Length: 145
Image (cartoon, rainbow, N blue to C red; front, top):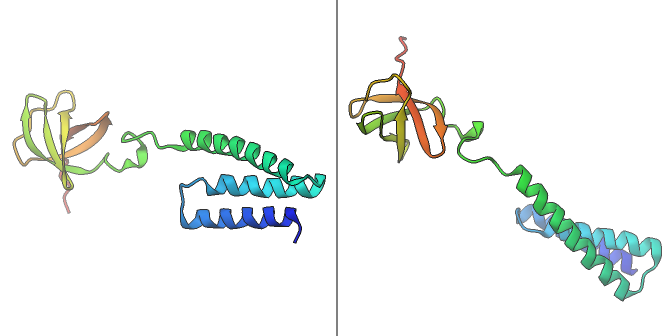
């Protein structure tokens, strides 16, 4: 088996391993190995040249992968997909417009929307927005069946 075939096979194996261990850098290292195999096939490089190409491609592709990962990272709790807006929460205790609510199995700091009165304990509230880690809530609208 030629050297370029070994690089390509190794690259494919590493990329396949990424499926079983997502989040690792095997995809980028596998692409570097595949690229090294293609360069070796085209240029008939000696082993030292192959290793140099592999090292350079690995560094470049890992940096590119990290940059792509940084741009895809969700924006945090304010992301529309976070699923908090529109959910019901239960008031635990409020002093003025600020207090705490229970949402699911967690307690959250909360603030009533402007113009809403301080809720009674155990009153059902609706999350209308998220400000950092503070839920903005209002009294829940009761729907009739």
